[in-house]
Length: 459
Image 1 (cartoon, rainbow, N blue to C red):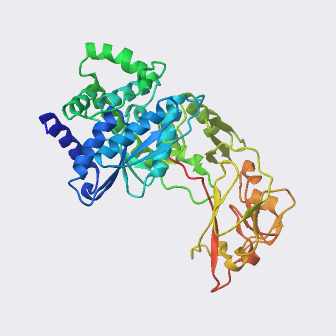
Image 2 (cartoon, rainbow, N blue to C red):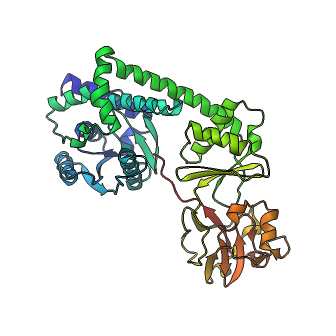
Image 3 (cartoon, rainbow, N blue to C red):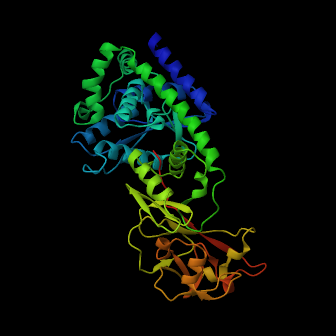
């Protein structure tokens, strides 16, 4: 192996050793497009994993189906993996070419969702992003007016699905990869779409970066250092926001994120914005842009206690009721149909309303345990039609409307609460609990109903 090959392999080994708990006993999956970068990465990973009997390696190709050559690229990628003796699989995704954020972003999101779904527990997805990709990402984020989180560009490692995403080549230039491929007779496919300058990244790569490198040859390394500084600054901001956030709120009984407006008392305007961004991101929702964040502060955080303001961005919305903020997927029309529920399985609710599932009874909340003998009967989920009465554990029977008001259930949630009926008897209401007469008796088996958010993939 050449001197360049040894250096590149050494860099890769160094990242694996520094970023993973036990590299020789890890399952690896290379995101393999068949292009230059991923072809070099797969060959290098294959040579390293071959020395580790307890490690495993496979390659996954994502076929976006956007170009006429997509199937040919998939076949070439499969042949390259087979030549190395690496297990290969392909996933076909559907990408909307008229997606609001553009086809590039839609393809990226679809790709990461597919890869995350294909990973097994504890697996490491290895991607071939390199130093020049990091420079492009940094500049694109700069053009979008991003803050420290965006300017930190791509992290070397982060969580993805049931495992980790690792980018071990972020300190390696495209020229180094090309030189390694030529010296080691590595073939690859050229993606013709990479020359299409209608895409922002390609325009930057072919028109802008050559000029920058002509004047500042070390621009990629400089940008990488700036990105690292931004990542450090973002880490400090996150620590401050975590301190301001304090303990998370208790269970609300329904799958939305909740934050008390009291958390903002005494904070400067900058800390309010920092806390909002941190809270929204930590709950798995996209962070709104600068203008929308200002609207949230002006019209939601600073609203009167009796107001019910609403701000939407994309498929996310933030509402206020009394002294709480509610963060959730955008709500559609209130459902009005009856859903049959086989309680042995989770029940998916309409729209973005998540799912219902049964959990093992918790001794800390005996007032919510429904007897198994009742859950084995015919169960349905319905939504408020008006006129319902309910007697929760420890309470008295009265109109459900009164209970919802007393418990502070936000008005927009009241028509969307999945009400569980067993044998036509209302047995459970989110945020209120189980009916008194249906509680599991002493020594009787029972379970608890939970309303969960729909699972999300963060890319």
